[in-house]
Length: 166
Image 1 (cartoon, rainbow, N blue to C red):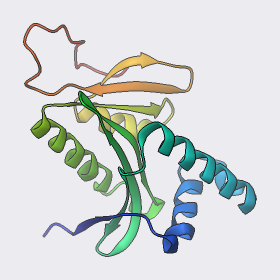
Image 2 (image 1 turned 135 degrees about the vertical axis):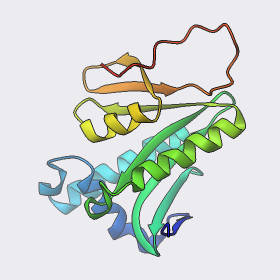
Image 3 (image 1 turned 90 degrees about the horizontal axis):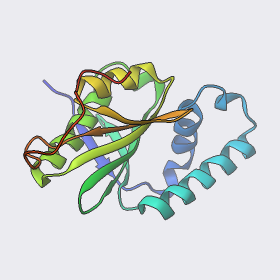
C-alpha cells in the first residue's frame, strides 16, 4: 500500500522544521550559527517569493509527519520547479520521485514543460531528473538548467536528445 502524501501551506509552527530543512539541504550549512542560518533562510524565502510568488510553496507531509517542501511556479508556458527539499531521513526512498512525478503529470495535463535548476554536484537529483526525461538547457559554473518537454508539444520543434545531462 502506498503511503499518504499530504500538502499544506506553511504555518508559523513550521519555523523550526523549515530551518532544519534549509540547513540540511546543502552541505556545510548545518555548521553555521542558528542566527546566520535563519537570516539566510529568510533571504532565500524573500527572494524566491519575489521571483516566483509564494502560492506554490507547500509543506509535504508523509504519513502526517513534515518531511519536506516543494515550491512550484506555474507560468503560461511552463512550470518552474523552484525547489524540492526533503529531510535526510526521507531521502532515498522514492519520495522525491513521487513529488517530481506529481509535478510532471500535472504539467502534462496542462500541456506545459517543466523547468528547474539543480546544483552540478547533486548527483542523486541529477540521476532522478535524467530518469524523468529532463535534459540540460544550460550549464553554469554551479547550477545546471534542465527542462522536460511536454510530450505533445508542437511537432517540428527541434529538441535536444534526451540521452543525458552531461
